[in-house]
Image (tube, rainbow, N blue to C red):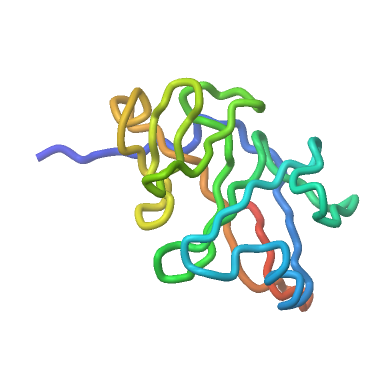
Length: 147
């Protein structure tokens, strides 16, 4: 038997910090329900109504924030690990998979931690870069940060 290795380091590691200070902020801007998903790109002011601060950072291609099938928050760099370009971002398709609009690789983000399902990413074993999500150490309700 051989081991399967997932390479989730293809996308450059860049600073990540999104802070939701209250439950109300998490409900308004975050992903409070199972299967919710949003993309955050500070440089492009996406979403436009999110109150970005000077401390906020959204990684290389943006942050794909979601709540999995059990309502547990998860976050990934939105850059496709095949294309490795800041402006080529995965989106959630009709099958509830993250899909690259260029190479059409798909990833299971709701139950398999960004593992590739199809396309060149699956052939090469390239997964989405994962970030940590959880309560903040300074009283924030929820924080997205590097793992």
